[in-house]
Length: 270
Image (cartoon, rainbow, N blue to C red):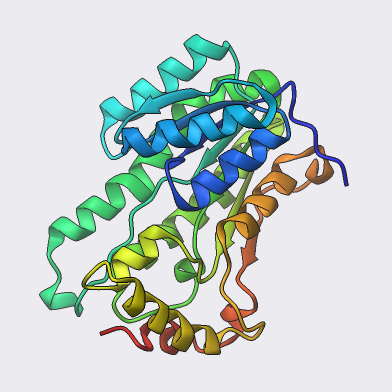
């Protein structure tokens, strides 16, 4: 299949690393005009520079915290002022957290996760929906299979992703008559910086590699996803090849959802 986004404006949140970085780079290779959002300015500008190298199209880099209304409003305003339109919104920005059992959980963790993973997505989509209606564009929310399968130690994160999945299904019905599609790509175990930080008490490569070696035994296809696996699915659903796909949760997980989710995520975590 050929994918061409040369006349499209694509906004990718959480673009400074991981899945967001991979998604931004792939859209850049396909000629998209990019608005990239992240909190880490140095990383974000490095990703933007790599994207520009692909087709010579300079992205708009927006440093913003999407856990705040100000950051969300800044993102929407600057994107529309710069490009005058929007065709694809990729809501990828999120934070994860490993937590203890319910009655020992710090409510700040809950609030932080929901501010970025749910409220930020809700508000940004709300603000940009009129622009997407004008272009008959589409929204891709990046969720997680943790929103469907329970895992001890990830209660706020799993709840937030379940909320995001429901948001996709409901908003897709609201916007379908307007010609806007809304879908979710739901990764399984994915090698990225966020997972490394969430699962390891220290940022030590050997510890993370040990965890991955143990955890991937629970994946039926034998290996975890990488950012490019998720990015390719995001692009496919955002493209005209998926023109009648909406309200759908697409899992990219190597079959992990069919296995024991709790064991897969807890194994080898110290």
